[in-house]
Image 1: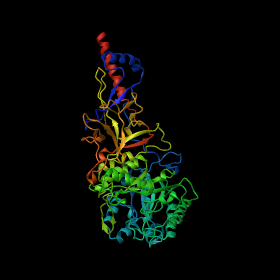
Image 2 (image 1 turned 90 degrees about the horizontal axis):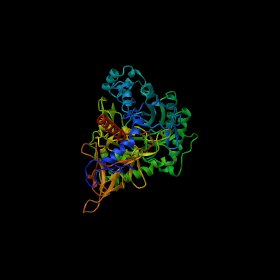
Image 3 (image 1 turned 180 degrees about the vertical axis):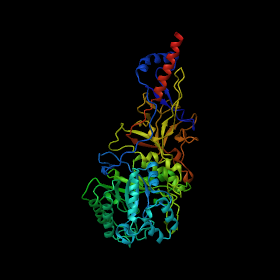
Image 4 (image 1 turned 90 degrees about the vertical axis):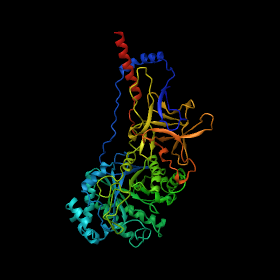
Length: 601
């Protein structure tokens, strides 16, 4: 059997290259015999395709969403992965942010162009229940807040919107997103319009000053009915971040179940999404007491996960231990529901896109690895680069925003690109395009391990090494991590595997460290004790190399292991047809045959 071997793993920092060995040996005689034996096959086999279409065509909007065990599916039962971005419309102006900077249609088209198929569009209860808001026009709302600059911008960029009522303006946003093929989840973010979320802001829990549960249920029913005819409104998240000293599970069950029933009665087409306690961080109580609703296959749960969801964790201690501890805590509190057959929507997560937040930078690799490994549905916080008004500050900048302050371009192109792999589903109903395999996902970059195409083979058929590098995850091949802890390219003609040449036999690749994100091999350099080497990213930011493992234990907060973090992600999606080794072999055989024939004549 042909195998793939890496460069010697006791040489840290060298690229991981794939080279062929075979039982016939390397003599010229054996090579010619191999050529002769293969010529008939060369002439009979069609030339392999060496291209791959990286971009997937956007699917048509589903008519409705429902659930199949832990998955969200369309009317055909095929997985729909929610890859959303949050777009607030719940602050004091009660208007979707950004309309003073860009035309509405351009913003909606930009959302789709960035790869998001969904927007979590926030709204306040009082928009549906309080005439003092519902009767306001956009112009009146902005004037009463003395936001004359924002009003002028709305007039210049979105003529006609200023004269719409606030409810109609929300409808215009929904329609614009639908025209760009973007789904909408209407998120009841607060009751009284304003910034969220403090424990004592009156919006936290049932019975708080601005949170009358009867008014809330009425608002949910009205909003659900109002958008029942909007085909791209596929879900309603019925309350954001319950919190504060009044929290208790009895009221949670009493009112959340009633709210869910009200939404379903008004619009049975939409998915109903329920949040937990403690700012959407705790659904552990469902482990003992499930929800009881009159409808089925239309319910999902949501969770939020930020670096500050676990205060002070990410700025101290070993990153592998912090990641393991925090991820286990999130699993115990919320993500365990996936194993119980419930979809869990990561409806808020994100980082400071300016790049200087140490806690966010350390947290990102961990949350991205979890999102990929579990293939979660998600909504990034947030789209907006700035606000009309936030916490009394006009034009407040949003450091977590995908867009810059002026809404013209990406605030951080690198941060946006690393989302691409997460926007594409890895598996789920209707996506059984290949037998299950593993993807080597690099969460810090959002890329996956792929093979670099080799150059043309020389006439002596000495097969070149095939270095591994980071590339788009939809260009990966099918890796297999077997019981012997070996990494094998499963579907290749030559059954390639990653091998430690220094040891002379296939390597045992271990998922080392508490985080289980280091792909490591134990080697024994000459005349010294063994050490662990880990897959890493080279200095060029692209090539895959081996280096001594960092931060397996100890190291404190100053140790950064994230370039060495790789997540083995299960997938059943179609893999790229990478027959480059076979193609190069056949090409060289043909060249050899041409030279041989010319020498004879």
